[in-house]
Image 1 (cartoon, rainbow, N blue to C red):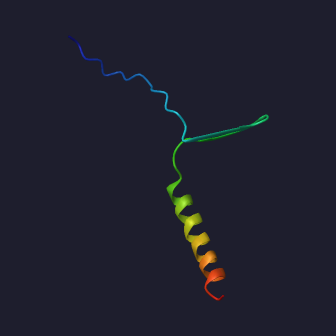
Image 2 (image 1 turned 180 degrees about the vertical axis):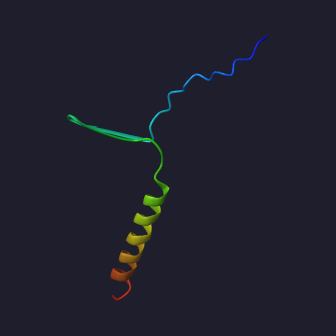
Length: 53
């Protein structure tokens, strides 16, 4: 039995794919930095709006 060192490329499914008419948005991997930034900013803004009441 011989082992091949050549690897066949695997087709990975994208993390997110949005199609709207002729526009197609594809996100290949999870943008953890962007998700962290958005949740932090939204938490600060929500807390700043809610707490003074």
